[in-house]
Image (tube, rainbow, N blue to C red):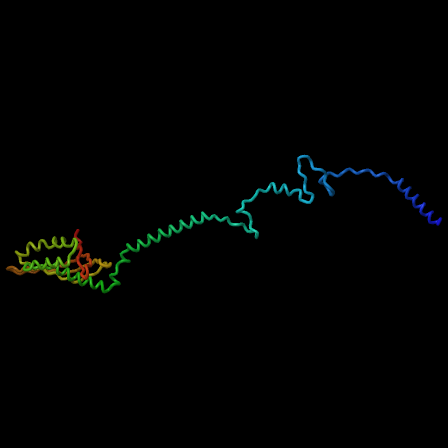
Length: 251
């Protein structure tokens, strides 16, 4: 028992000596706020407290970077979004459609006015043959005259002529009519060739070649011959083609 008590007292003495011989501890100066580790000191007046767990430079970065327009922000995949301007797209489409409509209208009008698109002289064989036959007969009838039967020429003119061709025919045969009774003239016209230059529905234009013989049957019979070339405009009235205009190419 004495030995145990002796050891306990000795340990207490050693602990007392150690405590009295150690130098006194001085309080260390507090670390500045915001440096190193530990708790930050109180914020300065007028300055908001910083978030201890955040990035000190985050607020400065956010303040320096301006907000991007909504249309220019990158898409989730990193690709820039295209700013769609619907009114501009509609305006451009309207202009293109208007230009196409104008072009189509102009092209259609050109095709309608192009004589080669309307001329069926080479494609409508039956109608071409019909107009050639009837106009050849009409030319032979209206440009033939005999002093003995002047009314025959008038009947032919009524049957085969129309429009301004009526007056043209009178002017062309005026001299023959005046000389026919005195010289007993007989004028005969025969079509040798004709060609349909234009055939468009009920209208046609033909080039006519003809031989004419003029015979005086007086005391001394005399016959003269001549060739004629002229163009006629023809129109269809019912089942009959009539001469509407005569072009002698005279200047």
